[in-house]
Length: 42
Image 1 (cartoon, one colour):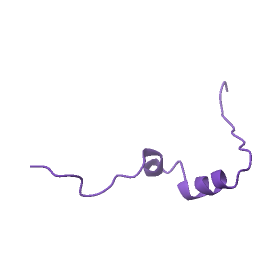
Image 2: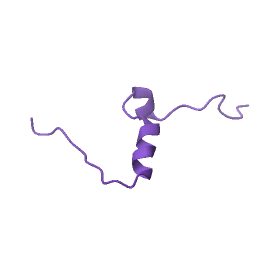
Image 3: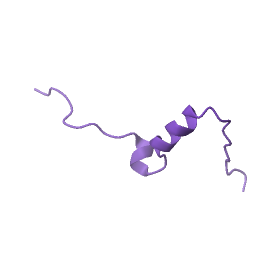
Image 4: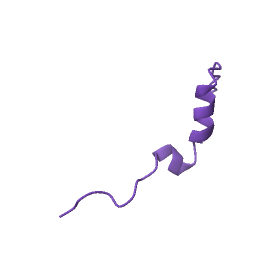
């Protein structure tokens, strides 16, 4: 009978290499305003 996972799967964005969570955590803790650029309608 299955008991649980043998290992922990990382977040999807971490697996895809899109998000560096160490840098993201530092930005969030710095309390600075965020600038988000989104590429749309191009």
